[in-house]
Length: 233
Ligand code: ATP
Ligand code: MG
Image (cartoon, rainbow, N blue to C red; front, side, top):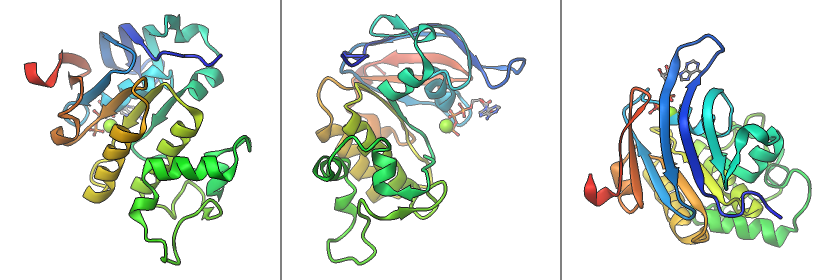
């Protein structure tokens, strides 16, 4: 019943811009990612990594063909698209309310399920159980998520993907805003807690983060200059 059920991604001649008449930031990109593959995306600042993640969900102006599971995203309702595929942006924005409301906006899951997802995402390994400022489902979140660190917000977004059972997860890793400990917690959660059938695209700033990826995509000035297994590069 859930679409996409496998998470295969086919991209053909994808171009993107931030405004209708603005300059192209991606130029005729084509690639394929098989179901369950782990792909790392690298490239210097401004090369188009975040733009690529946004264009896969049609959050910016796009031309070309993007298909998940053989279905063109252009033919899918945007709400359906964005609830089937999870993108964790460089700086996630949260809603004000409780952590529970952010994780489960439609009150569909019980606390045990939500806590399991937070644990799997790595939130609890970053805080001790006797800490009075410990984050729980009842913690309040201020507008945008400003009372949480960027790393904690990414972990929360990852927990949301786990709860939803997303088959395709796109992580745009935070840069300097994230400390090494938080980064390694996120990486080990991705490695150990996601099902083997989940297709994962990680935009990485440290090559070390993606050395065990199945494939690495190198972007330069909005074009793919390499796309191969780490051994071949
Ligand atoms: P970083 O490593 O710094 O995150 P990036 O590879 O993610 O860089 P993008 O953010 O995708 O790079 O930027 C690609 C191009 O798109 C750049 O030329 C940038 O100036 C442009 N761009 C990015 N965001 C916007 C925006 N909101 N409006 C207009 N142009 C933008
Ligand atoms: Mg970016």
